Length: 296
Image (cartoon, rainbow, N blue to C red):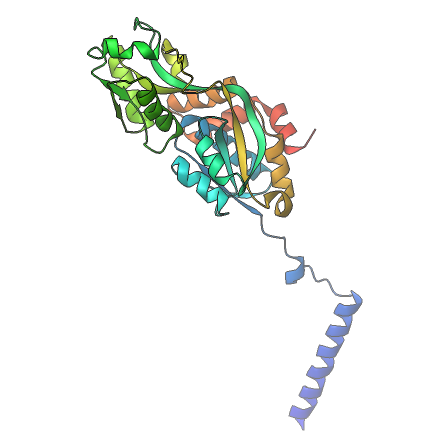
C-alpha cells in the first residue's frame, strides 16, 4: 500500500512539474535550450610567407575578438588553395592576383569566392639583387653568370614566384639553376652574401621586411614575365557568405596597406611571435580594427 501511494505521489509531482514548465512558471535557465550557444568556428589556412602569416594572425585575433573559435593551419600555396576550394578551410588571406597565383585562380575560380581585395596595387614579384650589383635587368644575368655562381636562390617549388622564375629562365634563355628551399634559407643566403659584399640574385616580392633592412633592387623585366604590380585578395570557401554571414562581413571590410603589413612582418623578424606582432599592430590601430568589426 505504501509503495502504491509513493508511486501515485511521484506521478502527480511529475505531471505538476511538466505543467509548470509548459506555463513558464519554473526557471529553466539551466535547461539545455537556454545554455549559451557554442562559439562559431572559422578555419583559416595560411602559407608560410611573411605576408600571409602577418595578415592571417591579425585576422585570427580580430575574429576571436568577435567571438569566433579560430583554427589557423599552415600549408604550401597549392594545398592552401585546394583546402579552400574543397571546403576544409574557410579562408585564405593571401591570394596574390592577378599574376602570381593565376594558375590557382584559373583552376579553382568556380570553387572559391574572391571576398575582398585586402591590399590593393601594393605587390610586386621578380628577381632581386643587392643595390651594389651593377647590372639592372634580367637580360644581363648571363653576362655575369660567374659572379652569381650560376644560381637563382628561390623558395618552395610550388610557390607562384618559382613558377614565374622557371618561365623567366626559359624566356630569357638564362644559363642558371633555380635553387629550391624556403623563405628562411633564401634570406640566410641573401644576408651572408651582403655581409661579404658578394653578388646574389633571389626570388623576391613586396611587401617584405627585407626591403626595410637592406638596400635592394628589382632587376628590370622587359619581357614582363613577372607581370605588373598586383593585389592581395581574401579568398573564401563557397557558401561562407551564407552560413557565416557575420564572419564573412568582417572579411569583406578587411583592408590595409603595405606599410601596415610590413610593420607586422618587421616585428616578427625582430623576435616577436606571430601573435605578439599581430596584437601590437591591433593595439596601435584600434580605429581601423573597430571598422573591420563593424563597431563604427
